Picture 1 (cartoon, rainbow, N blue to C red):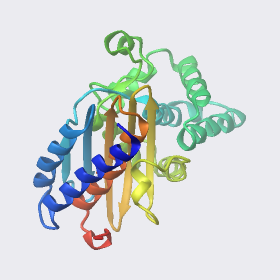
Picture 2: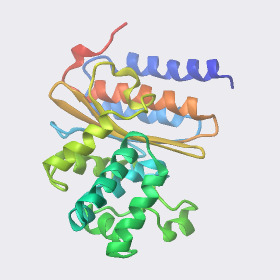
Picture 3: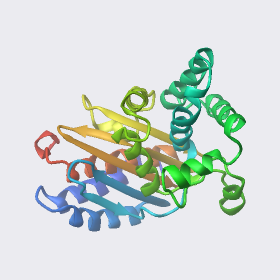
Length: 270
């Protein structure tokens, strides 16, 4: 299928959803229609979205397992801040801070592997599993794990729901403390990647982390719509190419924010 064909296909889905939703349906109606949209996606897609103020949620295949791709850098960065940062000299803190910034803003792989090596050297091989199971209370997610590699053929896997939980814990500031949470979120608000969740949110604060690996493309983050922080986690796997998945994520993110936000007046109607 051509790129033009892919674009028309996704645009048709988005138009259909807009006609189905209107401006008054509750999230449960949105979830029903989004289920149809996701099933029309060529490949596999999962969605988890939540208004962090009202606690309203939308879930479609939210517990399906996907390769994390670079969304796993969120867990590593949070682990470095939580466990390692205060244990090392100031000169080492500078290096760790640089790693975190590079992981968040440009998704730097060298910074990711250096950070994992540093935290494991200090706390042992099991530290990431401890963070996932004990701290974050996640059941399915693995990061840089041999167990995951043997079971899923990828060393890092998660679900849209669980990676959404990671981002919510980062956002609320309780896990890392306010200062470090804000620092990470600022890096994520100034990432070089703007084609997925942020695409249709000009002049809107979007803090997000993408992941791209093989035929997976994922994005998880928060769109600030007035007083409503809208958490959006979309994971995809497709043989149709990254442009196809990217437009799907961008379109679905816009619709999710529209459905979950109380500020429907700010969304385009043309």
